[in-house]
Amino acid sequence: MVTNQTIRLVIEESIRFLESTSQWETAHGEHTRRKWDGAWWHMSVLYEMGEVRQIPESVIAKAKHLLETQVWQTFVISVDDQPISETDKMKMDCCHCELAVFYKILMAYGCDLDRELPWIREWLLKHQLPDGGLNCEPDANTYSRKSSIVSTLPPLEAILWHTDREYTEQEAAFLDEGARYLMEHRLVCSKQTGNVIDKEWLKPCFPRFFEYDILRGMSYLAEWSLRRNKALPVGLLVEGLERLNSSMTAGGLRVGRQVFDPQGPWGGQTFPLLEAVSGLGDVSPYLTRQLDRVLERLGPQHADV
Image (cartoon, rainbow, N blue to C red; front, side):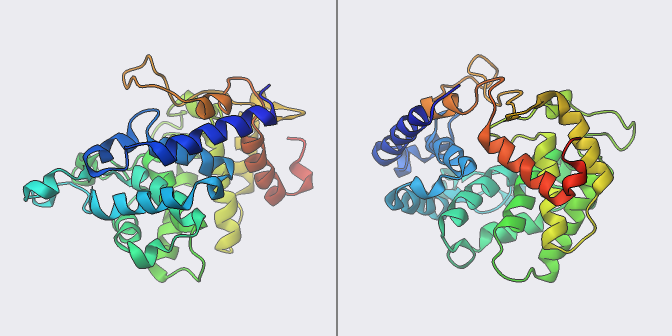
């Protein structure tokens, strides 16, 4: 079990890295997203822990500047979407889930990205597919028109959690259609066969970055029903709790898998904060907090599911 003192120390180490790294410089901007130890990964872990305010303001300013100046502000689906000038060709190309993670971090910190970088929210809302989800694979947006659950959750969360006013008609439809998509897939299942698409999604993971697990989908539906004043899909959430049962203990929810694999196809390095909060089998206070929120929405009659 990792102690609170250890967590404090590795948070401080990540903050020192964020302040001192050259990854924010134009020539190294791409490195900020390097798996698994780029600057954005450090920031995302802090955000998911609920510690985003510990990120120094100077780092937030650099991250925002990077989004403003070093990202191609169009999702490349066809040749017509590609940059033409040599300067633009040097910019980072983002996908929906990655861009949504960046957006959530800065919005949670207190940035007004809808005023300063309005293209990000417009991007997320623009690319919802007819089935209600999104897909970061360009071809899927042209041919199959079928969404990916992994690509879908970060954009939905970005709009649901980071709108401090009434939702516009477009935003409300975006959120409702996203909820429909999750419910039609029963959080983890194929619409065609009814089988679980990926059994790894039944294992809670932390931090997630843009990866999916069943609790992430449950959390969205619970919060969506509250914020949109929609019927809570009780049966589906209870089914989700039953699927999570093997990861539950009296002390909370255990981490069931890690999204990073330095020995896997993406390679890369980790960092102490990432390792400290992602131990397999460890009870995660962060996952437990999310689970408790779902249980709160379900009410006391489902507390012992």
